[in-house]
Image (cartoon, one colour):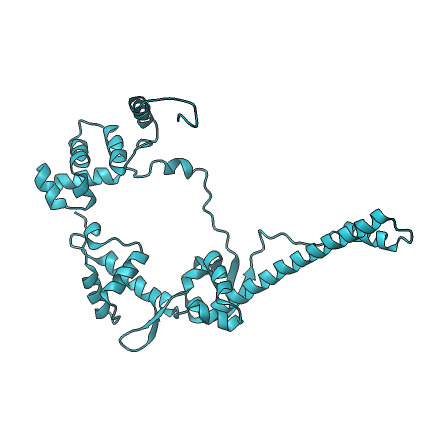
Length: 325
């Protein structure tokens, strides 16, 4: 503040201003930590309610146990029954850990405009490039006419010759630019067609189990282009399919063999892993070793370390943090 605003303030003055900010809406704004954010919100509620009093006590004094979901220790230390603790957890779960998000979300536009549109007619794929955001480019006839006029003038001056050179250079640059854009569209079109044809079974059915293992190299070899070219397309482009708008990157995956020796995509394994976690007993969530065993029972031999990697890819917490009352 001293350097940027020419305001000299001591720590106590800054803290008193911060306290005023904590009174502003949305509740929790200006907090210095998640713990403080939750406390600010709780203290704005009805303090005479027992579940609120217990919630404040829990966040204020046993936040570390709460963050690690050590429910039995919390019950013991705060002398809460399981029913009381359940009410406390419900109160805290209704709080907003990111109150500032409600301000920014009003101005953000998260609509995805697909780059390609896939339709299927009588088992045939029709892929179109969505040119909604790509205006048609063309050379201006007026500049071409000016150039022709200068060229045909038998009494050209020095300045006219310079103008001819200038116009010719600019028109050539514009023509090259239009051709480059057209070439880019052609590359995009070839790449997406190769992906759609490679994953033909999936696009005909919409079943993720029909997704074949596919890496960048597979598509690069089909279209005879560099892997980096395919990577740039896959990482940034979306396709509108009968099964929703998807990032092209989501169709790429490594492969592994199941117990029958069939080559399967890791996408299928991740889907089954997600289903196992969704169906688990939340009072006693499955560890990575137990998840590995469950996958083996379904015919997918996956090591514990690989299960951990897939779990992290799916943004699934470790067993301890998935525990619920």
